[in-house]
Every structure is written in C-alpha cells, then in structure tokens.
Length: 120
Figure 1 (cartoon, rainbow, N blue to C red):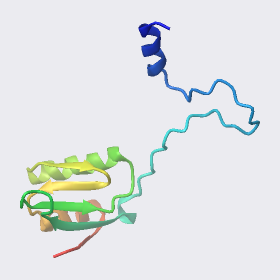
Figure 2 (cartoon, one colour; figure 1 turned 180 degrees about the horizontal axis):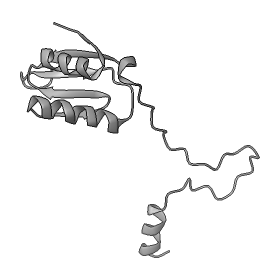
Figure 3 (tube, rainbow, N blue to C red; figure 1 turned 60 degrees about the vertical axis):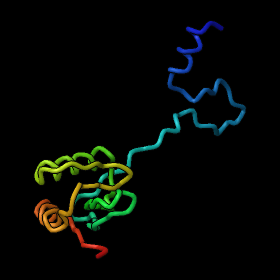
Figure 4 (cartoon, rainbow, N blue to C red; figure 1 turned 135 degrees about the vertical axis):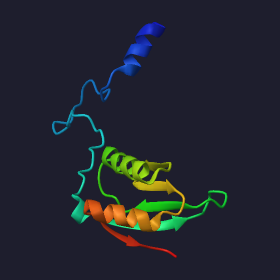
C-alpha cells in the first residue's frame, strides 16, 4: 500500500470493523456523546480561591458545571469579558485570573445559577 493510501485510510472516520460474526454487534460509532447542559437554576456551582500549582498567583475557580464544553466556554467567555480579566475553561472548571469571588458570585446569581462559596 502506498503512503498516500495509508494517510487516507487513517483520516477516514470509522470503527475499522469490516465484518463481525456477532449477530448483536452494533456498527455505530462509539464516540462519546455530549453531555446535556442543565438549566442554570439546576446547576450547583462552587466558587473558590485557588493558589496551588500556580506559582503563588491567585485564581477564582468555579467547579461543578454540568454540561457540554462549549456551554462552559461560553459562560467563561461572558464572565471574563464582564470582569475584564483572562482565564480558561476546561475539564469542567472555569479559571478566572485574580480574586473575583464576590463579583463572580453576583454575576452567576444574576444569570440564575445557584453558586456557593467554598474554601477559605
């Protein structure tokens, strides 16, 4: 097989199963389904201050978000723009640079989220 055909074969999306003797085998792809995002009033978010593994710099950490990564990133983008700071959204957590716990609590409450302070 030429290099060109190998590359095309790698780029094809499929399970790679050509034939199965199992009559109950499901040929659908086994991709991870996106988690449904709960409405804001059902979310139970925790807002805390974190300094660990950040060279002593403080970040406001928001955990407990249940939903898709896209919705988490949208919420993070809105919070960062309203606060005028940087941050990131990944692995179900929002990081906002600096100590903005009170402002984040107020913004989340205005949007209808249930949020609690945790930690110190």
